Image (cartoon, rainbow, N blue to C red; front, side, top):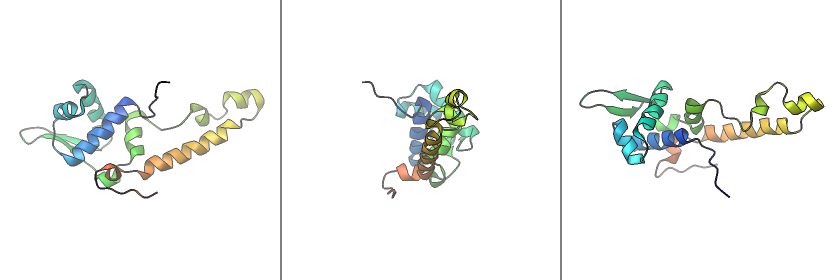
Length: 141
């Protein structure tokens, strides 16, 4: 059976780029793309979204490049994912006032559990920072 990733491709590239920039600040977008073996245009799009979210900044000129705008300990996985793709939920059913099953039956046993899972996943993603993912970091549960 094929493996399914929970992270979207641009979220994965964003996390890898942020980790790279925390270790090698000031790389150009092209250098980041090359080091991560990512399509340059796609990496530029990812970096643009990260800049709009206030996580990185681009500097032009001779000493230019891309830099973290926020310290690694303040960048959570949840923030990165939501900066690129919007709110994280397991299933859109949990976001509806009344899901299709509630419309049909008047209640839904699944929806409250989806809401609870969403809360736990968000809590976990918000509990991991970029700093936790860097070499030498120790994350305690």
